[in-house]
Length: 123
Image (cartoon, rainbow, N blue to C red; front, side, top):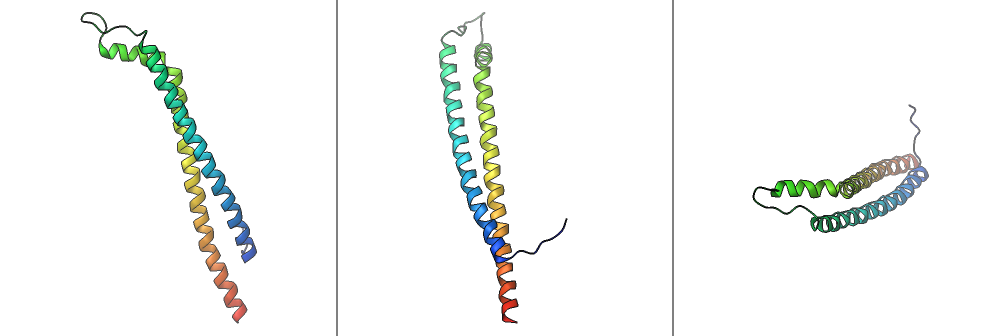
């Protein structure tokens, strides 16, 4: 891997690209949160609907745990959509965090490059 010195113009270009990336990452996170909420609402509505047809709890028949297991099995697809939406939201949070960290590193580099160019100009 070779090291290419950065000029102030190159640093500014990197910072501008990171501002765009931060905006896109935030928008992705917002959409992922919306999708997660939609999936959670769909799961709860499906649970409510299927609960109407669920076996009734009674002594010597179904237990509460059996009834809940029956409902969980019936709404497995909606649960899976929710789990995937949660994963997408977490991935979007990770992307935003990493992009923010990269911007911080480039800002530190910018200060060093600025100092180096000022000293070189002063010599």
